[in-house]
Each structure stands twice: as C-alpha cells, then as structure tokens.
Length: 401
Image (cartoon, rainbow, N blue to C red; front, side):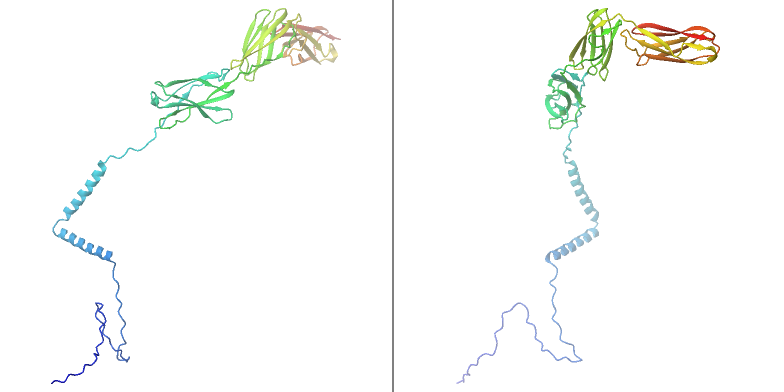
C-alpha cells in the first residue's frame, strides 16, 4: 500500500494578469568596473505622426505611383488633355451663364425756367413757363418740381406738375410773397432721382405807390420863360409823364438808375397847372400836381470893368471885364455862353469866349496895350441861352492924354 505523501502548500505565486506585452527580463545590476559598461537607460518610444498626416503621406505615394505608371504607358498627354477639356468645359459653362446687368441711375438733365422781361410786378400770382430735356418729354411718370426761395431763406418745394407731351410747360397762378421771390425747377424721376436745379428766375412783388419829389420849380413859382424845366427824383427806371393843363402840352421820359429825371414843358402866359405821373417797373402809379405862372421877365446881363479911363503914358495897363447874367426870374444863370469884345482906338479888336459859373458870372482879363490912341471904345458882352434867348450889355473905355 502506497504511502500517501502529505500535501505541501504550493510555493508558486499567482501570475498577474497579462497586459499583452512580454514581461521584461530582470537583470541583476552589476557593480561598475573599469572594464565594464554602466547600466543602460530605458528607451522611450516616440508616439509617431498623427493619423491624418500618415494618411496624406500614403495618398501621396499612391498618386506618385499613378503618375509613374501613366508616364510609362504614354498616357500623360491623354491625362493632361482630359484635365484641360474638363477645365475648358467649366469655363465655357461659366462664360455662357448670363451675368446680371450693372445697376445704374439714369442722369436727368435740368429744366429751364423762362425769365420775365420785367422782374417787378404788382400782381399776386405769376405763370411760370419753361422747357424740359427732350429725353423726358412724354413720360408722365416724370414730374416738374418748383422751388421757391424768399429773401434770406433756402429754397423749398412748393408745387409739382407732370411732364407733358412737349418740351414746353406752364405752371399757372403761382403765388408770390411781398418782396423778392426766387424760383428754380428740377425734374423728379419715378425712382425719386432728382435732376440738378435750373437757373434761378426772380420776381419782385411790389405794390407800393411811387413818389415824385420835385426839386424845381416850387409849387406856385413864377417862371419868366416860355418853358419850365421839371427836375426831381422818383423810383428807379420809372416812366414819367408831365402835362400842362393850360395848353395840353405834354412830355414823357424815364427816370435814371438813381431815380433822377429832368423834363422840359412848354408854358402859356399866365397860370399853368402841371400834372406829373410816374409808373414804376411793377406797374404802380403815383402823381403830383403843381401850379406855376409864366412871368413877363427877360434874360438880363450887366458888364463891369476894373477901369474905365487910361492915360496914354501909363500904358500898357491891365483890364478886367466882368459879366453877370440873370434869368427872367432875376436869379443868377449858370452855363450861359458869353462873348467879350473890346474895341480901343489905335489897336486891333480883342475878343474872348467864356461860360457863366454858378453865380452867373463870367470874367475876361486882358491888357490895354501901348499904341492905343486918345479916344473912346466900347467893351461889350453878348449872352446866348437855349431856354431864354439872347441878350447883351455894353460899357465904354476911354484913353486920354
């Protein structure tokens, strides 16, 4: 009978679970000797390239192999041609596709407003006329817009009208404000596009009555002449009419740019009633009535000398002749033409022309020369005027021994 050995506890340690890697061999460290190498270090592995990079590298290798194959079999030209055909087809397809037209805003020309012959008016409304560009004629969806600018204000739209079938247009009964009214116009397109403005056309609404300020003659004056000269001032560019009720004579004229005027009207003997009328550029009318009397006075002249007697032994000697001219009213007459004449025995006749100044005076300075003989000679002055006719005056110069 066999003898059963008693079981001993197992001396084998349990193996740890496998990790899939071989268990490293343990090496017992050795002591360092001069003839032996030292212990080696553990080798650390590089994690390697990312997966995406490795895929790209693989594809590159495959493509390179394909190129080599195609080149070896003579298919490179066919490959390039095919690629070119494909690209050309794509280009042709893109070229054949209609491209949208560029967006552009049509340019609208400015209209033209007709300027009035006379800017001033006393009417409360005016008819504005003008023309539009030919390229918008007949297009009812285009409109004419009118702007108004008053004094010291910016233009503001006031009315609109559709473009008609002709280039001409009229916008009736446009209201005016007192004073300056500056109008301009534009063309308004259906999309809201607006043309540049036209040139400005000005109207001046004026209802003031013009005044006549008469400087001469004064009302009730006596005029010793067959005409009277009316001198005064009114509104610039006004039309003037003067009518004499005594003889139905009349005269017309126009005030200068500064408003001054001068009219000459025939007179009858005795009283003369004169009515003056002025009409300003706006059409407003003012009047003035005065009365004058034609007198019986005449144009007069006097002549004075600085000396009247000269001794032969004192010659030559200075001589001054002075003429004073007065109108029929006895007032100094300016602008009268005078001629002096001096006739002395023994010497040629001396003459001199002159014009009277604002005091009605004219002067002739001369010399009584040597050679004058004993005797007397006249010194005269002759006066000529367009309004009052002519007159003269005389004095005597004596030469004695």
